[in-house]
Length: 248
Image 1 (cartoon, rainbow, N blue to C red):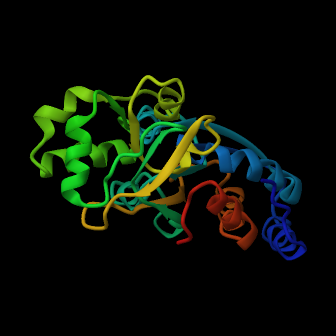
Image 2 (cartoon, rainbow, N blue to C red):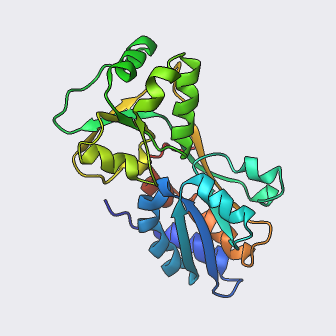
């Protein structure tokens, strides 16, 4: 679904960037936001005159790039960038919340729909599965790994988990290689042949914050701030929502 920026949103973005020269903004972006960025990046470039150079990956891989000294201006993660502010990797007053995402279940279209409406039903679903997919090192995958520990079923369930790079869980499900996916919704959007069934019971669900910030060594900090402001306009938030992200 395509979203056109309102005149007010474009005007706001231009107002924020008109005092700076056109810049090349290097952005590290969680793979879960790729679908939204495919729509928003060209809109931002047209409105601001800046150019976006984006790298998409799972959050741990992006953090490794930062730790290795790879330059970047903006980072957008599927968790709170406050975790990067405390060790001095992201500018403190640049923290920008873009939305939140819960953990849920998706199946291949036409497959039986498992019951996970209660905590006990969710446990039975995992224990009876042959295999299922998570985002692995992604934010939701790490939460699922901690959840099965808390539920006391890690030893039985861990060998059944399949994961890979950003977007791999949905692709495995689409190809019929796993019984279902336990994940956030954004990285599954657009994957053919799968059906989202809904979120886990509230007692065991986790709402993960999507947020962004400016790198402490950013070469284009002002242009980066313009991007973050742009991503919080109503039109941009509508794109995030259409791609599975709940409003902040």
